[in-house]
Image (tube, rainbow, N blue to C red; front, side):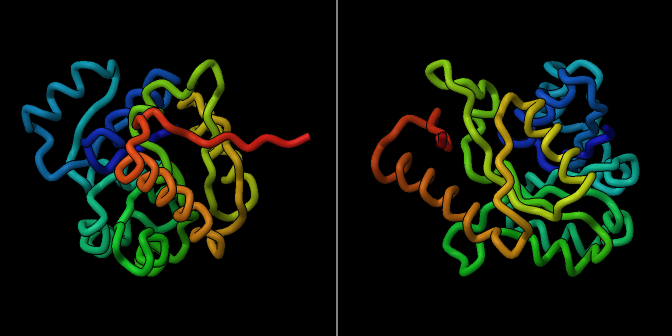
Length: 202
């Protein structure tokens, strides 16, 4: 798949590296494609490229939002036409706000897009290595059912995680709660950042 990763921090960098290694075409979208930080990141990801936000979005089938949450409304509004009709993944968190995801913001700007809430409930260290104590971590996500959802699951699996679909985006609060639990355990209870959850049944 052709993937635009908007954001070059730990989340975007970790996921972009995994997807490029799996054979996907990755372009990092940023306001400064020539920044030393991004140049250093690209040196570790063979085949990945950088472009401005508009160029990265235009080249992609899938757009991952790994920007700071506060930057998403402006970016979505500025690039609404380019985003519409694509697969959009919201990995941002606006902790402290009544709604911590940007799903509705993206939907308002790109009403024909297929929007998924994923990669927001674990630390980037888990994306780098998804096996913890020999157990593959689970990634809970929401979004519309259908063929596109299978593509999103392929991207989750390419990171090494087991995808677990919670339901459509009327259930994003469930996935957000998992992210809030992760943050609480790590930052308030002192758990190691290589923390993940596993759904077990029989």
